[in-house]
Image 1 (cartoon, helix red, strand yellow):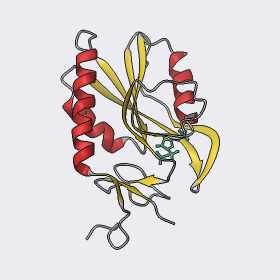
Image 2 (tube, protein in one colour):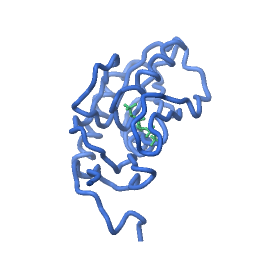
Image 3 (cartoon, rainbow, N blue to C red):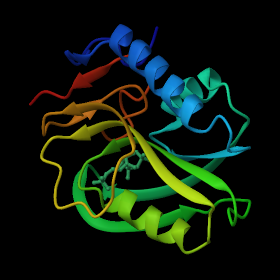
Image 4 (cartoon, helix red, strand yellow):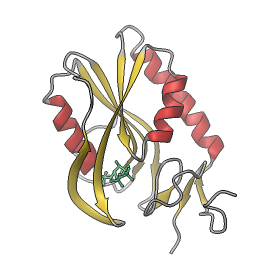
Amino acid sequence: MPADRGSLPPVLISQEQIDRRVDELAAQISRDYADAGELVLVGVLKGAFIFLADLSRRLTVERRIEFIALSSYRDGAVSGAVRLLMDLRTPVQGRHVLIVEDIVDSAHTLEYLVDMLQARGPASLRCCALVRKQKAPEAQVDVDYLGFEIPDRWVVGYGLDYRERHRTLPYIGLLEG
Ligand code: PRP
């Protein structure tokens, strides 16, 4: 019995909608990088692990998977401070790099990561995010490939958690209360 049963959050974006959109994003990325050689996908742990798994398997271009771990929230409370918890294992200098994020909220995490990776001299650096909150602040960073714009609510599922709960829900749900 899945641990999340009993208090399932209401659906914001269904499994079918995610599936279709991930297909579209994978097709678009595959077209854009068709002649670029190997694409380095940088998944941002933990939240992006499911999106990255689904997206990467649908790409038709040569790719490798890397992970980086950052944290911007503490105990469910929003915090502006971003911490690097685990760095990449391989250099990205001269490589085509695509950051894969689950959510852009304040965009602090993405800004931190773009600055950090840009300083390492990649051949190119773009960002793909499954969802971005509509409040989209004065972000200094572009999302090149975006799945969905969402309202400014706490969302869970498909990798996203609330205090480690609901990450493995197959859809994106709204945390009530
Ligand atoms: C979440 C999410 C993004 C980031 C987005 O990660 O996975 O990486 O916050 O927020 P921001 O745009 O306001 O910076 P979190 O720090 O909760 O860690 P997790 O992915 O391990 O749950």
